[in-house]
Image (cartoon, rainbow, N blue to C red):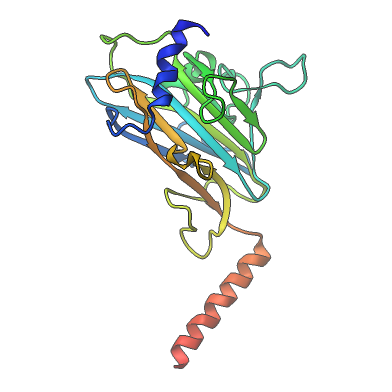
Amino acid sequence: MPKRFGWILACFVNVVSTTQAQIVSATLDVLSAGDPGAPTPPGVIVLDGFVDVAATDVWTVAGVHCMTYNGATLRYADGDPNEGLQPTVINTGSGNDRFVTLASRPRERDEAARFDNSGVGILSYMHDAGGQASLQPTHCDFSEFASPPPGPSASSVDGWVVRLAIDSAGQDSSSVRLTNVNSPPDAFHPLLLAAVAAHPPPASQYPGWVNATWDVPPPTGQNWYLWGIPEPSTIMLLAAGMACFRNRRHSR
């Protein structure tokens, strides 16, 4: 394996280290009306990941593991139109569909460079560390590393480093909720659409989205869960059930 990959693989071996990376914050955000690049097409949900790096440090690597549920699927760009669908997450093209899963070093949310010049290489994350990324309709597993790697004197840059694009009929940015807890946020969003989270044990020590910096290589992060609304008939049943519950309480 090329030596230039050695440092990035060491990061993931030490992912459970107690040392905290110099990431001020790392947040997944639903692309919504008013955001750069919005709106999304009907039935498409986009999650963008933003990293705020300490002013004295620089972003180097991220790892993403996402699974979809209840009919939701991940959207990808085709890396080789001559060979059937060959999913890719780098250099997906600013002139192409921008609502696809992608990776880049910190960029502005909708700038062309995010789609045309990702500035990262791709490996796997949880599966077969150092192997090929897994880009499937209901599952993605990849790590991204700055390429070329930044040096210790590189300028600190904050920005968007990952995009997860999800097809889910009947959903849009206003109908979903994003949480860090694997339980519905309320009675009207019981449908789990995606989990940016670890596998079940023994891999549960790995968060679903992590980031690392030059000064502190061990990545840190957390899990994220996307919740949607069920079919209209199910919503009516939920509303009726809640009404009955309230009536019972008032009748006591």
